[in-house]
Image (cartoon, rainbow, N blue to C red; front, side, top):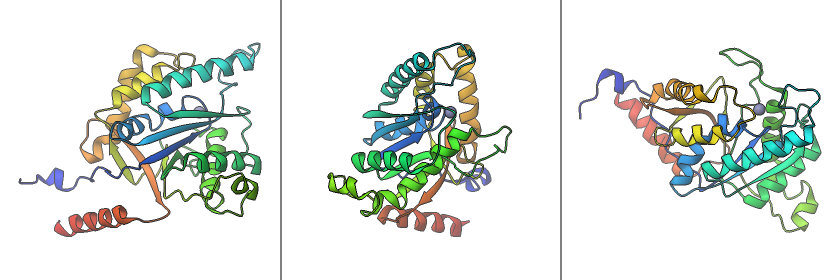
Amino acid sequence: MTETPESASRERAHEWRPERFMVIVAHPDDADFGPAATAARWIDAGSAGWLVCCTSGDQGGEDFAADPLVLAAAREAEQRAAAAVVGYEGLTFLHQPDGALANDLALRELLVREIRTFRPDAVLTTDPETLFHDDGGINHTDHRAAAIAAVDAVYPAARNPMAFPWLARDGLAAHNVRRMYLFWSNVPTVRVDVTATIGRKVDALRAHASQIKHPEKLDERMREWAKEEGQAIGAEAGEAFRLIVIDEDEDERSEETETKAASEER
Ligand SMILES: [Zn+2]
């Protein structure tokens, strides 16, 4: 096949897939506005996924007289419905306070417990270095706290048997997460083609009825965003990540070799 100049300059779609992955987020709906289509793609291909929500979104409204516990219960129900659409094996709510999430040792221990229980190859979370989004706006304090807590739980705590030693004594052996995929990053390095699963992302988002102000515009809005993220790989829909490889494996080396060979061809 003859390559057009446009396709030759195109970035290659990211194909590596973890057998097991965990998405760690601050609020119900973050995972669905985030990497839901990638999660659905991986699950369809045989991966097992687990979702961890640090808070239950009890400040996610505009009525100061509302009961935050009622809102939290509603949002947990919404997230359970959305997680079923994506196909996660299950989800955990850590019931931390919305708007006041702190990357402290207590949260780190809770996350290490989750990681050592599900034993994912990859953890997906927001980019903790995003304070301001390049395209405008401030990244929520809870997003940053959940993200840096996830990073600190992955490395070194989850893999160090001497970190929270009572966990290992309870049978939760140390576990090496090999990769992190950071979404909502200003410096993405890989893009996943999610053309086949972008519809599932929209359907999952519809489950968050308390948070979607204009459901009639949701489909168009999400497809537009995914189109922008997929442009560089020539996909109708994409999701972009900043990939952090902690431990290289056979796949990683061959992928690097491929990329190198491809760039040498040019
Ligand atoms: Zn959020």
